[in-house]
Length: 314
Image (cartoon, rainbow, N blue to C red):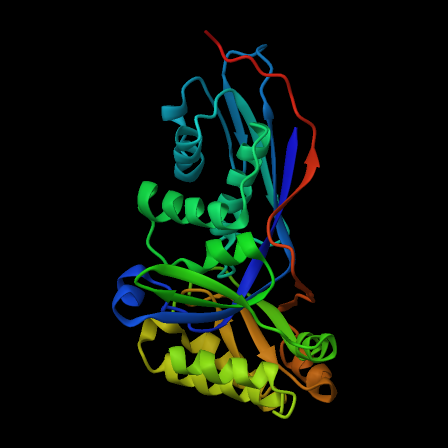
């Protein structure tokens, strides 16, 4: 049996510049972090006592005799890609899907990590990120960028640069005290379901604020506000009247800035709030679920490894 633990991510700046069609021509840069909310993938070989050969449990349960019968496209294509047979897979997560935190990509990375471990093979972070991108964007033909798979695989607080030759991951080096201060100044709330989607210069400015101790860290919050207001003007699909109202309530209560996380009209909203204003912001958002969180640095990992003897059917 194998169990993997893979974090979710929040993206601060550069969303949309990780789309392949965009960054091949223009380059791209994203600043994001993973945090201590995870998805778990449990995989083992299915004993041959049943009238089905594969059992899957996620938001629904599937029991099939042939891989082609699997309805979940990512699981079906991943099993075919890595030649997996006769497995039982269970998925659970700390946060809901379709909420703007890269949950589907975290699942893809965690699943691939579990499949390799079940085969007794090691896959490094780049291999897992690359193959998760290929799985979702090519085999499953799902639209979207590359940042989610990379963040889930590598973990940590990073700047991810994109270009014609692919991507590079650069950890953002911040003192532990400054990083904790940033973490303490961020508040996340769940607004409900739906989806949300997205400027390389903003990433440059944000990174300078983070790494330069001479800069006022509160400028990170103010830059979030400036970027969100510019993004809001790009089209109605970016936000809704109710989201705009929530955002303005947060600002009026004392938040310096914030943004909706992910790609379209709902999900999670994050605010940058100085400590003395947090009670007021929490009160203003009292009809929403507050989600405390901590940054994490590990990315996907195997947390339980118990190899099994497996003889393929002849």
